[in-house]
Length: 371
Image 1 (cartoon, rainbow, N blue to C red):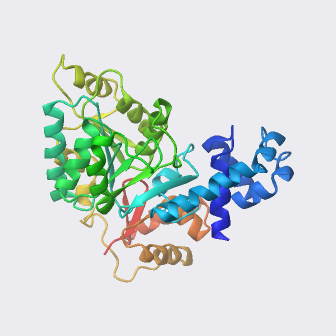
Image 2: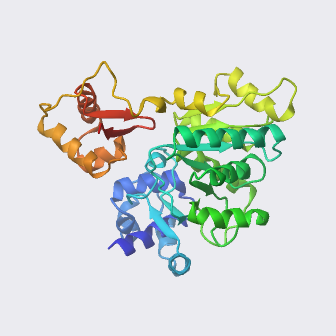
């Protein structure tokens, strides 16, 4: 049952010493969280490093009670619990090796929107950084009106990115370093409330979790992982936004940085990212959209003329049928699961469909049918 799988997934997240990577490995062997928890003793010999202590931990009634209480809290407060196998779970994040197996989400934005951008930066945003957030997202709205903007609801660039998105009618999601029973910092509460109807709030942390220092680093990997690209607006030579940029690079996601004047403290980190080729230089929304090739999404390439009645193989027909169900596009990983076709074989099929002018490849490993 889905409710049982959800409960036991939360049990895995509260298991001491397991962690996101261990939990994912466990799920791949056991097949489900329910099997993993209920048959823990049988799995200790199959999974390297899974000790009997973990099996004992899962039998503790206090962990089960905490998870049951969390589900009650979520239901009472309109919070969705997204587990790894849910269709609504961010598919881009699912590709990351250390992705959490469960997320808590409150809002109305589609976390699998066709285009998702993270905007991050220093907590000490200057007038330059604030103005850039406003100008960038104003122009982005005209170029890519369906983009989802993600940030961390922190002081500085984060909150100005959220507010600029709201001002320009773009949905925006804040990734939190604590549970959804509070807002930190409290002065951002009014913006957070507005985001619930024009975006949302997302976290891997259960209610009662404090915004401790280490949680912000964990939060940063979600900011990077849910997005096609990360843009660093302003940053000193050290800061959380540089950590987010490094994580984005490790996930093979596009990373951009806004340059600043030589000697400006809060542009030094951005300039260094560009100097080390860790980020592409970007000055405005138009440059960014061109770099992501989003400016040609609605144009059929002249070199590929769509056949009126293309001759499709049964496997190609299967992929086309799956893409018809999601006009906004689907991730490669989702297509692998739904088609049951191996990823190396699927890649070839997708290439053939592109050559026939049936589908188009988009940023972030997404594919969609050409209208």
